[in-house]
Length: 214
Ligand code: HPA
Ligand code: MG
Image (cartoon, rainbow, N blue to C red; front, side, top):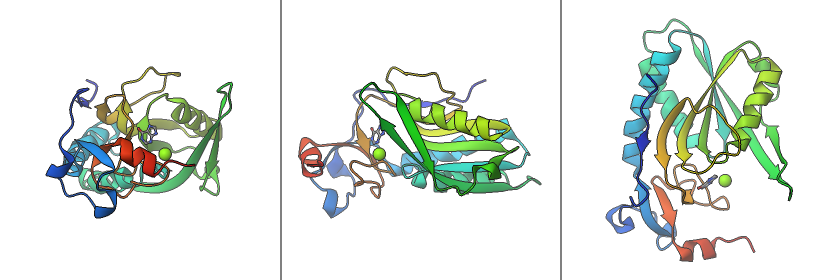
């Protein structure tokens, strides 16, 4: 049976003032969609689901920076607990993926950070990413890994947005399915801000204006 996703309904938002929000971000947010504590609870179960599926194999966890840095850390911690009886080790690697899209929307992704992708050759790799919406970036990353000679890939996503997919990409382990809203926090940014915010939030019009790139 496929692992169960936690589905956040379209209208679900908690009042920002019911949470502890850093002073610098006050006024920039209009609702809390997923509190940090709920993320942690969900990641614990996700790690158990991942372990149940993958079992006692050597596995390489690949963190797709920057957005998944918090999710990755939490997942590694919970997977370490879930794998306490494993005899095969888990390794960690980090890449940065930048996507460029021209006007005719032929996406190009640039993979940076891992000095040698060949290090992953022949390995079973769990790709850990923050969010899937169009699916383009993740699809290209998976293709690149396959071309590199990675033996098997799975994907673990913090968030999967309810939007039409441009490409079909496997979403093996998803923590939350969320509505089609622009969200920030728990690693996700708006022009590089809000990655440090613990809760996953919707921005206010004032916040969008304040941090707009002019
Ligand atoms: N927020 C931040 N980054 C993103 C999002 C989002 O909603 N969707 C894709 N990248
Ligand atoms: Mg971003």
